[in-house]
Length: 421
Image 1 (cartoon, rainbow, N blue to C red):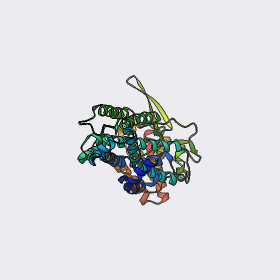
Image 2 (image 1 turned 180 degrees about the vertical axis):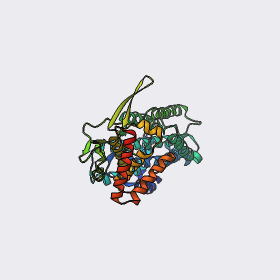
Image 3 (image 1 turned 120 degrees about the horizontal axis):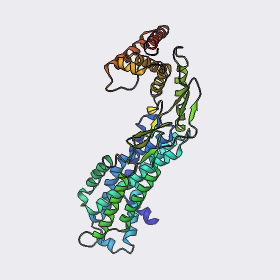
Image 4 (image 1 turned 60 degrees about the horizontal axis):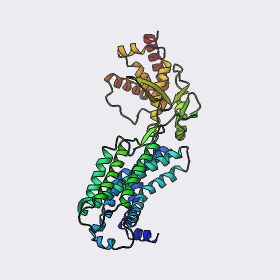
């Protein structure tokens, strides 16, 4: 323990802990604040820093790993009474502790902020913590191996660049990291265990089989073993998935009102938004019919058969995109227009290219959100759809409430007479 403290007190990396921790906190706090109050989003938000910190960790680990050759300490280490593996383990442990500290600091800060409300789903936060931890340890082992066998002059640069390539391209599809944590997804525990075991194998090979410090030429035995362990870790990463779909909870969190609106339990913080939208739905003109229940995305599943294979498809009436009420207003407006015109022939509407139903739907969306300026933009919308949206916006902003009710009634009657007979 005294030797470990000595390494901690003398390692130049100790000066980087505070700046890197500040960077992790900055990455967390500059994000939109929708993650606060949701454990999966909190864990995912704090985990994002692992992408950036791991690049620096790979470079720093490479620099420390090559310090023995860089300072010409091979002869002194060869004459030491301690085993080479024991000395290597201590150097690696101190390096890993110093490089992991900033990442963990970001998670601690995120935990404290969300823990004030302590919503359900703490295990999801822990899963994202583990996801980033495995990434950080993998990057440290990656850099340590490169620093051991490449010249110190450019080993750190090679370690950083090669790690960026790996985590950006081959590992991206396997979800080495995530940008957000929607409640219908979860860190895949089995995959993380496989990845953690592979990274542990790599670290074990590095610290138990350090190269001989005074032997001429490379230590091919240690190089082959550690290189094979690195390959195993890479394969374990790209052949597993970091996230998987969650099962539908036995009891979703439902808010009663004009419509019963059901959320994932982890999203209960959106109750005031749900109540606001439902309250607006209760004051819609009488021609509108509201569905009895709305389900958040992922709470509804549909089995689909395609080319002899069976898939389970996630569905839902709405989703909270970054906690924005417009996502609920959009989904609710679609459900309300479908419920109100469920007897209509929608094939005839599409064949006639009639945009009146879409204008009515857009008006409902604006009415529920109580605003005419949605924070999103739709790409590749047809000209008729854009005209329908413009018409709805003009009605919502340019007419009084009684005039809007009259417009809605006229358009609604026209659609029903034309397509619902």
